[in-house]
Length: 100
Length: 173
Image 1 (cartoon, chains in turn blue, yellow):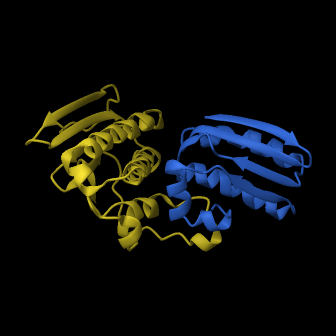
Image 2 (spheres, rainbow over the protein chains, first blue to last red):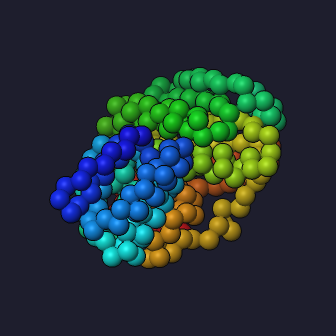
Image 3 (cartoon, one colour):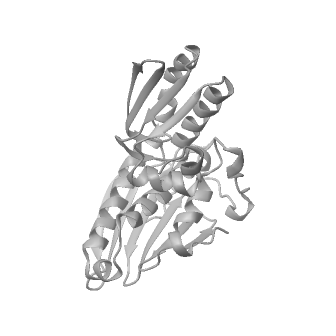
């Protein structure tokens, strides 16, 4: 799993690639906590490089989404495809994140 | 062959046996820790590739969605054993038997840990955006049949039939 962060104007773009699962999701926690400290106005989560996700990975993303939203920030998910797309659809997160 | 209590997580093996023409079973035995989860999902990915390239797979028009769903279900089943099945126990093994028959893929996941009762697991309220407790829901949604036999080993059986478009016919029970 690879995690990267880029500031684009008032938005912070996060890219997560590889495999986000019960093994790797806990590794994201410090990065997410640091991110929330910045009080981002808008998060763009780019998952175009994500090959596989499980319920633990979904839990990490949903947790971040809830915290960003609670702080008044906007949250956008882009690039979901393949197996992660199937998971997002079955959990109805495609509607939550407006994934076309 | 699988009568061990699985208390020594030192074995790892993969075998493939042909049954009848076009039918096979792949056996994978690994320690029940998350480090081996990816190996299990890769084995199932490979099995699905073989199925999709087979005569039955082509006739049934199996898409990549079939692979995504099988891999997702197996990953969640592995999580359940590694995170809960062997909780407060010496880590034992997980055995996967991935069998392709004429009209279906059957995946048995066997372990020697705590038994659980799938019917007792609460269904997540997706509207509340849960952060956990979604594993069994995903399994149920992505397979056509799910059975569980407690014992030594416990056995979770997942069946995916060819030619069934689960996204069109799925009923999440």
